[in-house]
Length: 161
Image (cartoon, rainbow, N blue to C red; front, side, top):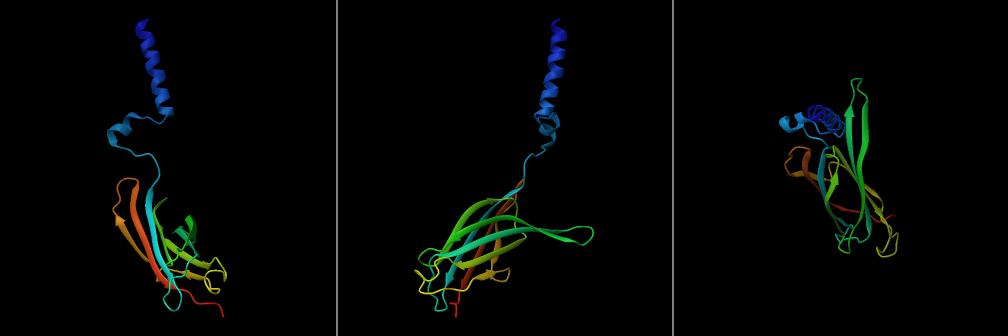
């Protein structure tokens, strides 16, 4: 009777462990469960045409993933987005934002959020692309962690005519 109960309990526990995702092979072969992730930081400075920092500029950071299928159709998907504002010196910084993976395409859009209040005038919106943004990896990848990445920029905005 004791042996029969042990066998039944053993079979039930194996089934439960499989349904809960605990497999014996994962302990032996080191299988990983989860999603890739990375740390991302952005730093920048926004000035006027005279080199003076502009406060309260809205900085929208968009990171995209892009791939091409077998039929040469290209797909682009927004991986993450964040909205920041420049401080009194025209600087902006966001450190270690956790994102899904290293962005393949990075776009930063600048808007005058205070339209004429503190900035002494309205500034034209501006989109920064690859040529305006310095992008580098600051930590190496390990397992699902694909590393840490940093984007930095320094740009000026023109007043609206």
